[in-house]
Length: 243
Image (tube, rainbow, N blue to C red; front, side):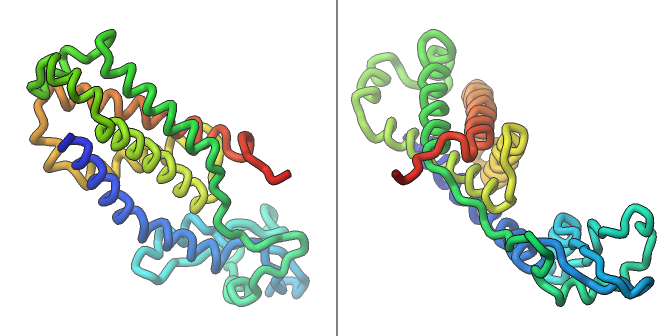
């Protein structure tokens, strides 16, 4: 029970670490995303350009991003230009034909719920007597009688389900803020969240018994891969739409 509470606190700590980075990335997209019409300094004709959002987000953690162009309708023929139109592009805003302002993508709840349920079921199988229950009991220091008593308690099951749901929504939120979708992107965001949780709880993890750490680490990685694949792969494919 204490382990589950500690895991919830680690999840909250990971969100606090990732939240400023995600908000900064969202602000970069809000400022600089989309194609922009500028007047090329070389031929004084109109051209459509776009700002390199990833480079701006990576170099602007201190609040002052280093801007450069990512695309131009005169490229690749003039890709080595001095990008003198950059200032005009930043001030132009979203004025290219057919380009919409990029906001945060919606979070679809059905893939998140399905991913959380899959992770919870995976945990039940992982900790069953078919796999690692005996080793887990020895590592925690419980006997079978105590385990049977815990099974009838609702709080451990509800807390485990809440952790799975919170993690799935965290992955979905990272995908929405980063404008990503797909199985690979979901897995990458899921592993990023796992790394953040591990970094926020490194001291507590180091104090766990080796057997318990190995069992829980194996389950965590497998559950994270499952959640990321489901949330990212089913984005916009399993949706409750209004009638």
